[in-house]
Length: 78
View 1 (cartoon, rainbow, N blue to C red):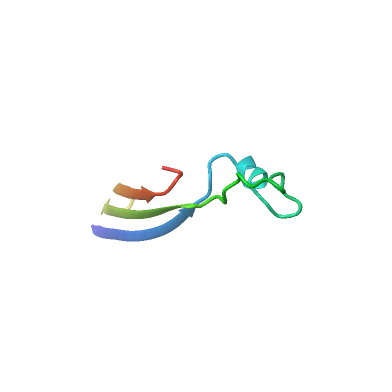
View 2 (tube, rainbow, N blue to C red):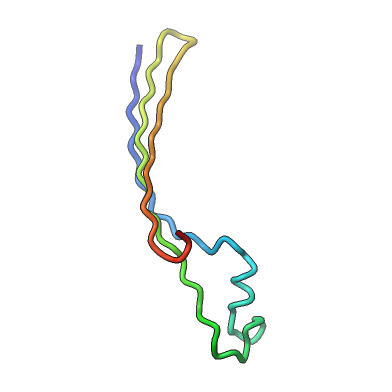
């Protein structure tokens, strides 16, 4: 019988859900928002994610795994 305990942390930057917003909000020469003063730059959301898991092996062919995660997102993509 063996046991494994897992703990992890991830810091993630999330882009907007609608990918076309990146092109349409670009104010560079090739962007669709060129020449527009009302377009604001997109800001990615920030997420802190924590994962905790445990695995218990029973014999050679049977094992049980469980995992729990929680996340905290700040920014426009909440």
